[in-house]
Amino acid sequence: MKKTNLILFLFALILMPLTASGQQEDSKPDHSYKPLQLKLNEDGSKYVRFIMWHQLWMEANSNRESLRYSIRRSRFLAYAQISPRFLILTHFGLNNLNAGNLTANPNTQSSNQSSLLFLHDAWAEFAVEPGKLHVGTGLHYWNGISRLSNQSTLNMMTLDNPGAGNSDARLFPWGNITTSDQFARHLGIYAKGSLGKFHYRVSANNARNNMGTLGAVPSYQVDNSNEDATGLWNYAGYFKYDIFDKESDKLPYFVGTYLGKKKVLSVGAGFFHHPNALAVNDLEDRESVTHFAADVFYDAPLNDKLAINALGAFYNYKYGSTDGFASGGLVPSSGSVLHGQVGVLFRDAKLMPYLTYNSVDLDFTPEKSNEVGLGLNYFINGHFAKITAEFTTGSRGATGAESTNIFRLQTHIFL
Image 1 (cartoon, rainbow, N blue to C red):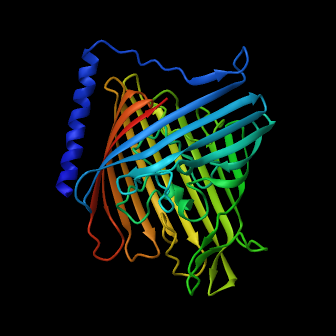
Image 2: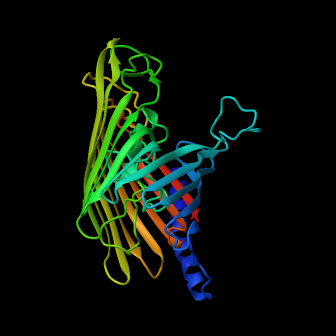
Image 3: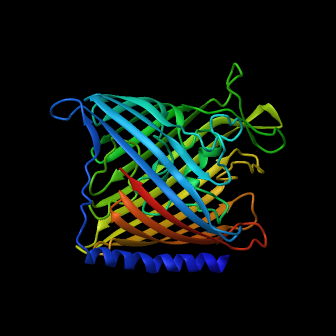
């Protein structure tokens, strides 16, 4: 299966340029795109915008036989600027639908919820001082810790967020998915804005219920049914400075790559703090969860033919002060992650090869784990229609762990 993964990836590398070359020889089709937007007044300052997207995967994994197909994401998002000072947004969809979690009749299912649509975002916002201070509340994506923790899934430079599954940390920028939030969203209140080229976003949120096994090592013990609701609140923030072009902060979703249309150099840092979320031995002996991260993002044209995208980030995860926590899910214990990615866009060919690397050093394994990825984007129509092939390889930190390989081919379309 390892050889099969590599062969599939090499085949995709060969096929994409041939496809691109063939399309350039034919008469160019009309790929012009206008946003799906409904104007509510004459000048268009009041509007409703609709966004729909699918990301469809074919995957080969060295740990299992045969190719697998899945719907990585199927989403619908709508937001409305109903006045210069009010904005409302709703976002729903599903993730990771595959043959293993399909159900015969979703209307009668009781345990398997994977094939059902669910709410991703639902928040409303008021501009206290337009551009400088906006306050909102609801189920939101104004996250802390890093740029990739606020990543848009519409315009990633890579196939998906880092942590493909070969190392010990899986999709680590969204590390709270398995602990305190609902699929990278918290329920709470946020404030965001920009002061010149300095951008900030901070939030105070309620954590979801998470009751682990109480014992001698830290475990999540958040029960909102208790009167004192210990561990209910958590706090997050992300701050960055744009050295060149200023990025939009109308919505929380950071762009993965502008495909050479902007010159962006952003330096950022963030945090996540969940006081008293963990307990050791008894419910009165409490410890806290605290994460920090720092990152640098660069995306710019090099000349008329080339553009570059690069990101480097460092993450530090801390689950309590007592050793032994090993139930964090996507980031299973305290430790650190070093991540880097770089890609080069060949504009005329509409191709963007890229390279990724993660080094994961967690407390619950004796060795570091590493993951290297090689990918290729073919932009049929920018981020609106693209095909991405990615091959990743790496090993976990357990003693004697063997390397694993994953090949994924993604078709991505959004309107």
